[in-house]
Length: 258
Image 1 (tube, rainbow, N blue to C red):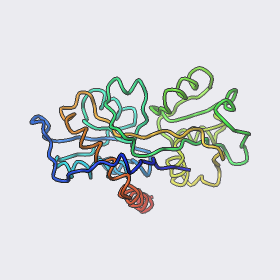
Image 2: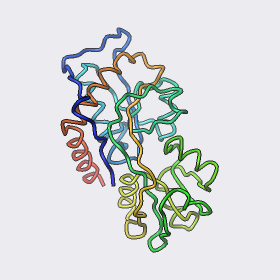
Image 3: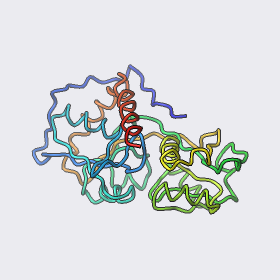
Image 4: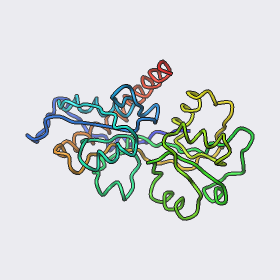
């Protein structure tokens, strides 16, 4: 279901691998991401790993700046850490007006991410667009945003509760507390396999939406001078096949661990 962001060769930028960071006060980068969004980002010990984490770490290495990945406790806490300037970078998130108040997004996005509707096996329903969810009970993970447009629609038109973790959301779904679950397609599938419930749930054929996924700097970071370098490198690494290889490596690591 996932589609990669297509970037024209005409906008590809030359990246100098020997570039260094200019700001004297920027001596190190601290990054975080979603602890439960395989294969893009997931918790491993005290770190967040995955394809998006590898992308950010690769760019930092090219820029000759040290970087540390930190697990902050939850996705909501990771966003709070970026808001308060406790981390410099947060990776693997959609653009929203609320987040843009405390984040500087790096253009271009590094991929498109499909969001899916999960239902109990045998309890699917006709679904063509978000309006088909009206009148049903839904569940999703705490801290998730699906873009300004759908977030507003969900707030005004839908009955969607939130849980502390995708595992709890699937439990509510299978316990009959919800008719559908909203989650990223790949992390949702990975969580179902992790729990051994892949035969008890199914994904509706039509994706709910597809959103651009970004890397962003905290507005309070002393390393904002690195944004141009990150932008150039994201363009390069998503057009030369490097990010595809990162995804394959992340998938292998996730499969081995689970």
